[in-house]
Length: 232
Image (cartoon, rainbow, N blue to C red; front, side):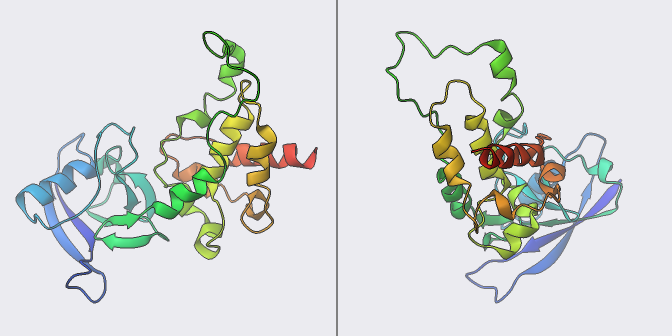
């Protein structure tokens, strides 16, 4: 079937403001939005700009807003959208660079504030830090984050608070707080305990869970962080 793609366009070198341009693509079963974007760029309009890499829902680079919902273009099959017209836009809130590309520097800067790495104070073991299968299961879900930004830019608090760390950062903090090998849990928790930018600004709307392409239960882990801080 033929599907019309209404794509957000903006070239800062020549456009005064963003606009939408329509393209028609012949779509078959199994074809993804990213496949169609590639078809448009390769055969219809080589000026179209967007990010993509692995095409396997691993790198997170093709996160964008598709028919009003944050999704991965490589994972979203066109026919599953059940629409003859598909609107493709960049992730909201981030500074627009061009077309579907946004500046994610602030996103990664906020991730870094949670100290997203294993903190240890005791001497390193001779071989490796042992972790039982049972303890590993505790972080199986949050560790699947691909840092695509879909959750953070779906959060209403992020839209109105520039300092808010956001769901991805909170999920990353929990991933290390729950890690049995980590010895810096207080440091991770302190990073998300700020009155303005921290987890207390989360209103449990669950947009982050709905938008996550890996279906990580981020809202649950934010709640667990709140419980840990409340018990200090």
